[in-house]
Amino acid sequence: MKTLLLLLLITLSEATIGVFVKLTDGLIPIQTLNFYALAFAAAFLMAVMPVATGQSLRFPWGNLKDTIIIGALIAAQISVFNYAMTLVPIANAVIFWSIAPFFVFIFSALFLGEKARKSYIVIFAIAMIGIVLAKPLEGGHMLGNLVALGDGAIYAAMVTYMRYEGKSEAGNDIAWSMLVASLILMPALVLVGPGALTATIAYDALGMELPVMLWAAALGLVSTGFAYFGISIVLKTLDANVYALVDIIVSPVVATTLGFLIFAEVPAQGMIYGGALLLGAGFWLTREMSRGAERRSVHPCQCALRDI
Image (cartoon, rainbow, N blue to C red; front, side):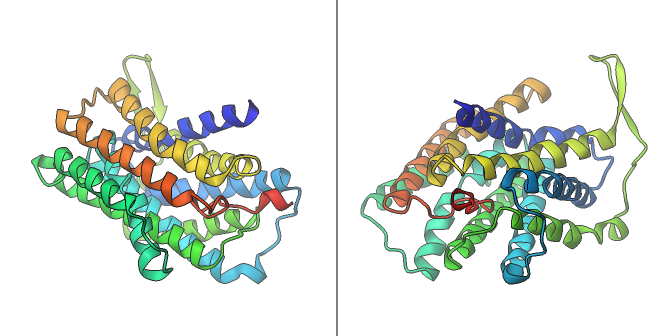
C-alpha cells in the first residue's frame, strides 16, 4: 500500500512539470528556468538520497563516465521537454513525448541487437494511426509537437545507453548526475540572463501575489527532485517495468487534466483519439518488451537499491 501511494505521488509530481513551467509566465527564460530546476533538484537529491540509501554521498569515481553521460542526457531531455511546454498545450507535449517507448525499441534493435516480435508490427501500426489522428504537423503547434517528439527520442537514447552499459546505477549516483546536468545548463545565466528573480505574479482568484521563483523552485523540488527520489524508492520493491507501464498511461492523463483545470486547455478531438491510441500502443509495447527482462532499465533512476 505504501508503494502504491508513493507511486501515485510520483505520478502527480511528474504531471506538474507543465503547470510550473507555464506558471512562470515567461518571466524566466526557459533555458535559465531549466538550470534553476535542476539545481534545486540536485540539492534536494544530495540531501535526501543518503538517508534513503543508507550510504554516504561519495563522489562516484568508479562510475564517473556513466554519471557524466547520464547527467548530460538528463539535461538535454528535461530542457527539451520543458521547452516544448512553452510552445504547446500540456496535452500535446506529454502525448507526443509518449512516443519514447518506440524510440527505445528502435535504438535497442539498432545498437543492442534486441530482436522484434511479430506483435510489434501491430503495435507500430496502432501508434502510427494515433500520430496521424493527433495531427502533429497541422495548426499553430507544429514546432512544439515536433520538439516533444524529439524529446521522446532523447529520453529513449538515455534508456538505451543505460541498457548498453548494463545499468546498475548506485543509489547516490543519480544525485551526482543531476548535479552534472545543472552544471551543464549553468551558462544560461550568462547567455540569456537570470530572469526576473524578484518579480511577482498576481492571481486574482487567490487574491495574492506570488514570487515567480516559487514556481522555479517547485519545478525543481516537486516535479524533478521528488519524482527522482520517489522513483528510486519505488524501484526497491516494484518491478521497474511495472512502474513504466503505470507511468506511460497515468502521468500523461493527469498532466492533461491539470492543463484543463488550471489553464482551460482543451485538447482537440484528434489529439484525444490519437493520444489514446498512442498511449495504449506505448503501454502494449513496453509490456511486450519487458517480458523476460524484469530488471531492465526503463528510467534514469533505475537504481540497484534492491541489492543494498
